[in-house]
Length: 365
Image 1 (tube, helix red, strand yellow):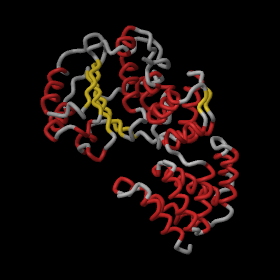
Image 2 (cartoon, one colour; image 1 turned 90 degrees about the vertical axis):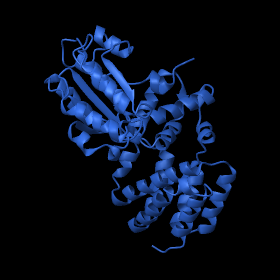
Image 3 (cartoon, one colour; image 1 turned 180 degrees about the horizontal axis):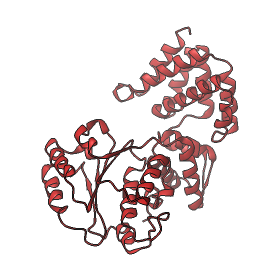
Image 4 (cartoon, helix red, strand yellow; image 1 turned 180 degrees about the vertical axis):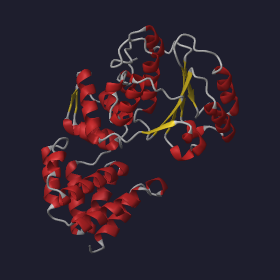
C-alpha cells in the first residue's frame, strides 16, 4: 500500500515549508544565534504546517551538523533517529485523545530525566486547546520552571481556547492560511514527481476548495489520482467533488449582477439535480466576486491573477468587472459570505444559496 501524498511529500527541512516564511526565518535565526526558547506555541488553521515545522525544528536544534545553514541535515545520527521516531528524546502527545491530568503528570515526571542522546528533549503537544482545565494548570506549572534540557512545542487550531497564562509563557507564532498560488505551485511539483498529467484548471479548483490548507489540497489531489487513470481532467475533478462548471459559474455571476432572480434560481435547481456541492458553489462564487472587487479597484490586479488563473476564466472576470460598480460587488460579497455561514444549519443544502440569490437580485444597489 502506497503512502498518502501529504505524508509522502511532508516537508523535511525549513526550505520545503510552504507559505510560512516569516515563522521559518525567525526559527532558523534562533538556531543560528543559539537563542532557543523553552516553549513555543504554533497556532493557525489545520493543514498549514504546524506539526511538520515542529518536527523539523526538533531535529534542527539537535542536529549534529557543524554548519548553521543546513540544519536539520537529515543525515546525522540524531536526525535519522528523530525521522524514524526511534528516539526517546522526541515525545509527541495528541491532546485530543490524551487530554487529562494523568498524562500531564506523566509528562512532568518524564522531563526530569536528561535527554537519552540528544541535546534537547522535545515535547510536541498537538491540539493543546483540548486539554482539560486541570491538565492546563499542570502544564502551566511545568512551563514556569522548565529544565534547561527540555523544549515544548504546543500546536493548536483554536488559540482562543488556550489560557492566556500559557500563551504568555511561550513564543507564539501564528500560521496563516496558505495562498492559492502557493498551493498550486506545491501541487504541480507533486504531480510532476508522481509522473501524472494534471489539467492546470484541476490544480486551480483544488487550491480553491482547500481553503488555505495544503494538507487538504494534497488529500484531494491524492483522491483525484486514485479515481482517474493516466490524466486528471477538469471533468474528473468536477464530478469527484461536485464542482460547478465554469459556464455555470459565469451564468450565475451574470444573473447576480443583472438581478435576474429567475435564471439564478433555475441554475441552483438544475445544479442540485446534477449533484453539485453547494459549499463548493459558494466558495467559487465568493472567490470570483472577490477578484471582481480587486479588478474594479485596480486594473493592474489582472497581472496578478494571470499567474494562476486560466486565460478564459480571467477574460470573463475582466469583462464582468467592467459591468458592475464597487458598491454592488461589495453588497453581493457580503450576502454570499454571510449565507455561506448558514450551510451547516440549513434544512436543505441549497437553501442558503437560494436565499442569498433572492436577497441580491431583489435589491437595487
